Length: 290
Image 1 (cartoon, rainbow, N blue to C red):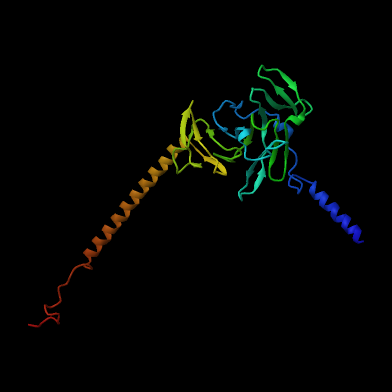
Image 2 (cartoon, helix red, strand yellow):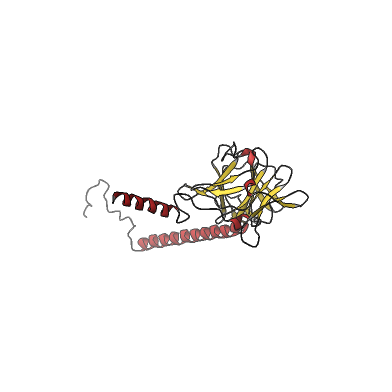
């Protein structure tokens, strides 16, 4: 009986462990179709002069990292880089990357392509545009309970790029690499007004390039994450209108209460509540007679 209970308990643990994405054995595999999708915004900016280049789109952002500057993963074989996000409580959660690619120093790229059967094949695209299938061991992606691991073909050179989801007008990402960062915001947005925006850590500078605000950090080595909350340029008009309306209401309210106070004082004077009687005698005693 005791042995039967023990076996039943082991079976239950295995069943729970294999039953879903939030199991004790991990959140499951990466969606192969997502890995083979096209980058958000159409393409990756491989030539940016930064260790990390992030480009913010409407519903996602793209990121290109120099793997030689990475702060996560294995620096010894098998080489890897780990990417993740954090929930509202600060707990690490594996990131769901899409359109994942790796670029060698000579410009050759590894990317996933999805054939008709729905799986994802790894292909190499040379600088001249030719394509060739390569073993899937060249670029492997899997998940643990807290992080997504990307096993890299090189250690000190090359770039890893992927597209990641975002919520609202904010991008928050751990610093997976050290060094310089650059973030390109969507057209028609800005971070110039601190009341509506947040940039953490403080940016080294901002610059408008081709109609888009770029935020630069010379070094983020001491920052655990980069957070940018931006606003639409038209939000300034809305915000200014609200401030003007509040000022008008404030001035109107102050004028109304001032008028009420003046009317109250006038009525008191009319009924004699504030009129001095002069009944006190000079000596402070009662008034005389005769």
